[in-house]
Structure formats: structure tokens, C-alpha cells
Length: 154
Image (tube, rainbow, N blue to C red):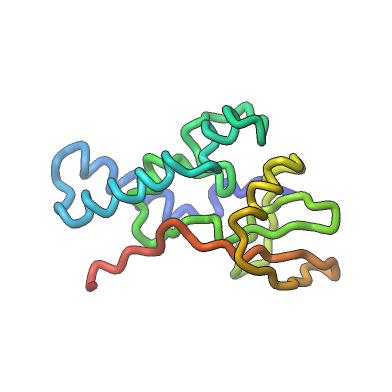
């Protein structure tokens, strides 16, 4: 499996751009509020890399201010209004290895094989769906997102 990298460059660049606007005090108040709420969700999440490392459910050598599922920098993802929380994009293989799945392409990105991490995921799972990818069965975990895409027209 490969790392996600910049397969979602449009959302990454939007997050960095809006973060810059916020730094320059040019971001509209409604977006500032949305970003602050999203960031608070991420900081409190068990799957924020810093929190997951401290809980001993994952080991990593990347920056701890990232999401352990999608690997995004949370302080930038909170400004990517076309993006959503990646908790809803987790699948497990038959050995209970966790992957982040791109739902449009079925591309898989390794998260971890740590059993305590998977146990934590299963604790917040409200259902499961079978998904076949490259002739291999996976369990798509149904986990509520912490936040959705932000629609400016709402």
C-alpha cells in the first residue's frame, strides 16, 4: 500500500490558503468560526496523532499535529472547507489492518496494524459494510464524522 501523499492537492492547497487568509485577518468570520470548531474536534479526537501516540495505540515518526487516519495537518485541514473528517473512510482487512480508503478510487492508504488502535475504532463503529477491492474483502467501518464539508450557502 502507498501513502496518501498529495492525492487531494486541491483540499490541501485550500487549507493552506485559507489558513494564510486567517493569519492576515482576511478570512470571513463565519469561516473562522467553522475552522475553530473543526480544529477543536480534531484536537479532542482520540485519533489525532499526538493523542493516539500518548495513548499507546499507534507509533509514528511524523509530526504529531496530524490526523492518524488521513495524515493531514489538522491546523490546515480545519481550513479546507471542501474536506471532511476521515473517520468515515476506514476499512479493515481480514487481519484487522486499518486503512484509509479513497471512496472515489478505492485506493487504500495504510494506517496501522496496532490491535489497540483497531479496538478503539471498533468502539465508535455503529455498523459495518462489506467492500471488495481488487478481489479482496474489507470491512468498511461506519463511523460518524466529526465534521462534514462546509457549504458556504447554508
